[in-house]
Amino acid sequence: MSREAIVIGASAGAVEALSAILPALPEGFALPVLVVVHVPPGRTNALAPLFRAKCRLPVREAEDKETIEAGTIYFAPADYHLLVEPDHTLGLSDDPPVLHSRPSIDVLFESAADAYGPALAGVVLTGASADGAAGLKALADAGGLALVEDPAGAHSPTMPRAALEACPTARTAGLSELASILIALGDR
View 1 (spheres, rainbow, N blue to C red):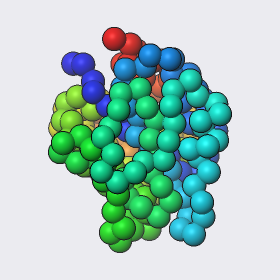
View 2 (view 1 turned 90 degrees about the horizontal axis):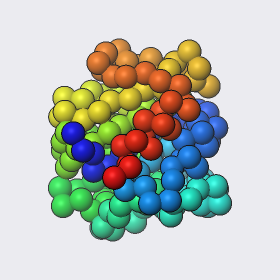
View 3 (view 1 turned 180 degrees about the horizontal axis):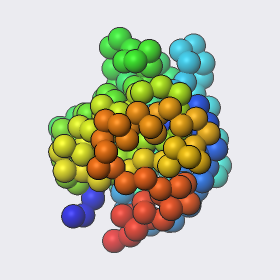
View 4 (view 1 turned 90 degrees about the vertical axis):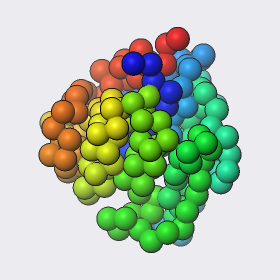
């Protein structure tokens, strides 16, 4: 199955985990990567500028109604849910928090699963909540590739464990192996 997009969710320990994956993606990587990291409301999301300096791919904060471009990394803005619309554009929403989080990993994963179906790959990384578990299950139920950071090596294993409980068919891997899997998906 060829993939058309990747979604990633992370919380506590996110910068370290994402730093092992996103900078590894090579120039010419063929897929868009949409990322939700829990950022407290009222804080500026410094992730896009931080990763822009580290990555070989273009990195930006997602904008409402923006067309999703291959080979681009999009971060959800602080205090907005990031969604994928059926026409493969981005949507931003200030709907209520899900599991105390806005942006919510579940909201991104569920909307992306609806838009991409089996052409989607999703990764749940380190975090201290259950956000991402329901979304990863929805992604897997739609035929997508479900990946989870190995809880044994995660900075905060709660989120990967919750994802595996909700989606026992997900493949677990350490960060360097996850990077290799994603590189292979985007190698066209």
